[in-house]
Amino acid sequence: MGYIYGLIVLGLLFTLLHYFTELNNKQKFAVSALFGVFVLLAYLYNSSSQNEQEKILKTVREFENGKTLVCNGKDINSTFYTLSVGTYTFIGKENTPYYSDMVSASSCR
Image (cartoon, rainbow, N blue to C red):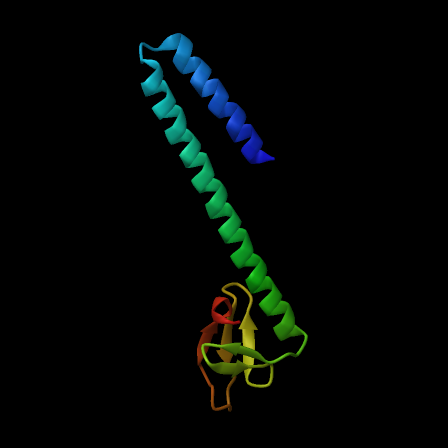
């Protein structure tokens, strides 16, 4: 919905350029197109960030439900690792072969 507002603002920008500047139509179109590209890039960035966040949260839920995950070629499970919620990092437990090993949840499949 926010990007619809972005398109409305784009239309208002073009209107303002029409009435309050001495730019020709080609220049006005270029400014509006540049702003439109900026809105499109912001949308794509937000979509990508949201997808990555959903992937990480899914990985964390699977870990908390006792499933074994594969991250960077390592098997991650609650027997050998704990979860640092602030950074979404799996940290190897004491008295295990993976002690102090850190693996990011974003690297899991």
